[in-house]
Image 1 (tube, rainbow, N blue to C red):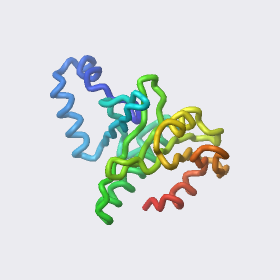
Image 2: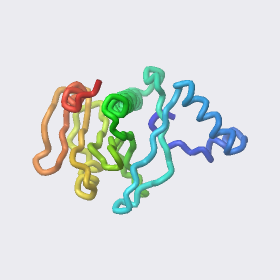
Image 3: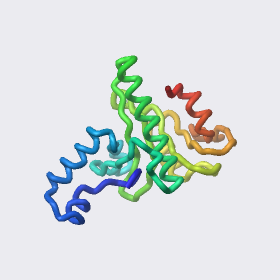
Length: 177
């Protein structure tokens, strides 16, 4: 479940309950700080998905698969960052994700007043810049992308606004609390 597109309709069918019932259950889980949901960042240039939310666990340590756990951990840190900037500095912040109808996805986009500040793609291992990041970097006015990982390599892409770096370096650069 964590990090995957959340289909309320699929849940409704699987559980054989009303759509409204599933929505209420999800709201209860959010109010109890079990899960949080993020919405897609829509842009007509990329035929972005508009409605499919993704759900994450507040207690990311409950997620078993390492890659999903790491993505969930980063999601919770970025949401705390957005909440901090809203509360401490009065900025209108949102945590979103990018996904188009061809299923190209970047894990997160931090948005201020409707304008994207930066995108984040999570990888456990050090890898070359994701083709999806390159795709979006060439099509959207997002000033910076980060591909964060658990390794040691830290470098800027030669032609794209992309930095591949360890999570620790990313936290320092973005001043995440």
